[in-house]
Amino acid sequence: LMDSSDGLGDCLVQIARASSVGMEIDLEAVPISSAVGQYSRQWKHDPLAFAFYGGEDYELVGTMPPALFEKVREVAPASAPLTAIGRVVESFGDARQAVRFYESGRPSSRLGGFADMKNCFQHFGG
Image 1 (cartoon, rainbow, N blue to C red):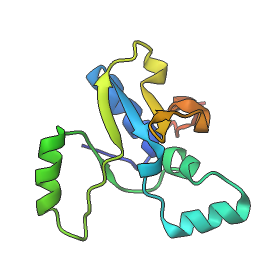
Image 2 (image 1 turned 90 degrees about the vertical axis):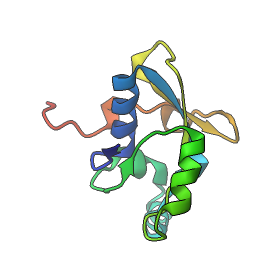
Image 3 (image 1 turned 180 degrees about the horizontal axis):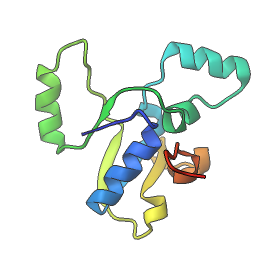
Image 4 (image 1 turned 135 degrees about the vertical axis):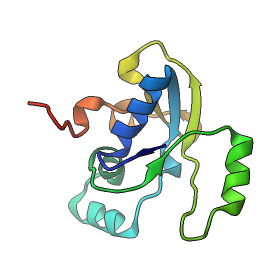
């Protein structure tokens, strides 16, 4: 598990790189609050950009086998729902594109097609 306080993109890329795996993320499954949705419509901004690169949200992000996920979901309290947003796959061989985006089961070019660390908050970056 890792917290997503620096953005979901940063979190997923760090987990993927540390584990030498790839991740396929279903953009349609990523939860977006109604407030972010409303703000995004008003200012014509992609709400997923806030989720992946905005930061300051606090959620825990982790991976587990699908069968275990279902067992944990059954016992999780309603106040802490679990949401599956993708799957772990073999490494894509390119650490810069460790997390790829999909919509309707197909590769998506939305947000550039992959989680780009250049868009993530960098604590000690210039």
